[in-house]
Image 1: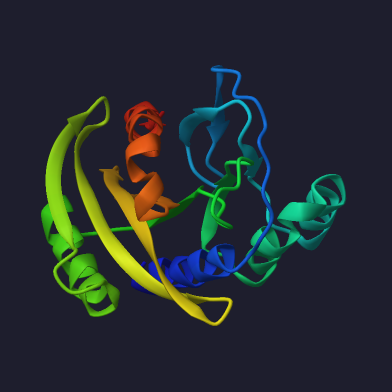
Image 2 (image 1 turned 60 degrees about the horizontal axis):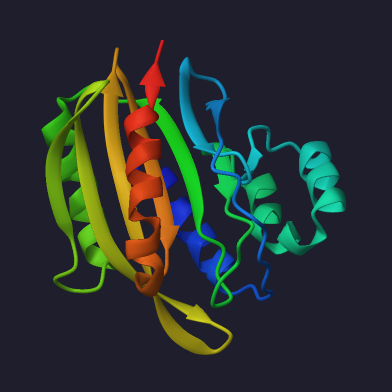
Length: 202
């Protein structure tokens, strides 16, 4: 699981390095999406671009229809750790706010698992930025972990804000990670909270 989460950080760096701006209209509607290879699902704004299968053909078809997102999704071909990936098409400050979901077996209690993951995260996070809270969701107790990651983008350093939710059900651990820029965090907070609260395991 730790290696999977670290791989997700590489994708964050890739996303932050891409350019382009778009301003699609937000519909206000939400759609529920299944998390590949699991019995879990999560809801996202209808306009977000979602990928659930990461085989070369699916990625190719997606990028043909959405050429500007090719740099964001092509790394998914090389990694089998992702179970769902989604992008807000409203690219701002050369960054596509995004979601990724990782799932893997976890054999220790939630709080012990989170502390183990945080030990690895702390080595990558901007010093002093890691925060952990335990919250109640429709799926029971979950961990809410936020922190800042410094990445290289176009030869310059910039920070990305990571907001993670750790869920555990029936021996499986799920990490739902939202990534955006610190300057956009307040704007996206209601979206991230609503999406995380929608996470469910059948």
